[in-house]
Image 1 (cartoon, rainbow, N blue to C red):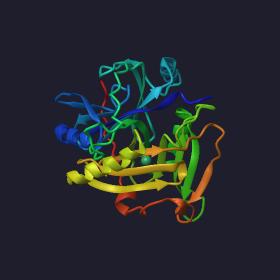
Image 2 (image 1 turned 180 degrees about the vertical axis):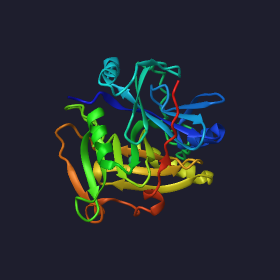
Image 3 (image 1 turned 90 degrees about the vertical axis):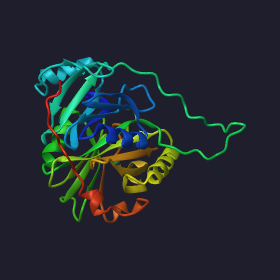
Image 4 (image 1 turned 120 degrees about the vertical axis):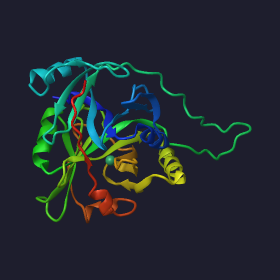
Length: 312
Ligand SMILES: [Fe+2]
């Protein structure tokens, strides 16, 4: 049976200053949809009403939002006992939602029927008669691609995601021997339809939390342009990149929000389907095909705490 979701719709973070967060997210490449005293909603260039929500509160992650294939998938989560009820969403775009809780306490909001908004106009691709090829500015962001979770209960967490969201493993990485598994990339099962290498990466860690949330940029050009823009501002912490993972042909760049939440610019040319082969890789030798700097402790040890709250 294929996955009941089509991908990640949004991340819901928590931060103590929405203005500071908005300034960072605009520099990162998102665009404000709505902000009031308690919540900030940011969109990308596409039709989704928002890709990123920040609620006023302590720094951390409240939930990841996933798009259901249709509304009947929401009712099936309730029928299976995974969720209590299907509720109306009182947020931009509306729609309906169920809330699941994973084994680490992270909330998953599965949504359906959110109203689309008008996409942003395309960036000009032809140099004007009076223009010059010196374009600068933030990246343009299409969508959320994946979330990376840290957990002290990796096997249980993997089992839960694979069963509940019907994800399938794409690649695992290990240190020394395969028994010493460090993390597993899992993708959607959409049958023969091509999907990203992973919608979820679950990593062994002492703390349960979120390592990073990844945003697909419009073109590979946006990875570099966005990097230069953030670097030139001189006020945000760069974590890793610009690098390329051989696994999934992923080109990436990581930046930290002012509240220690890692955000990734990402683009990839490789897709998989239900028949694609599983891979098991030793980190020291098999990852030698990667391009770029080695992982730093600051990167590998990071985990943004889970913030629990009852959504309205
Ligand atoms: Fe990532």
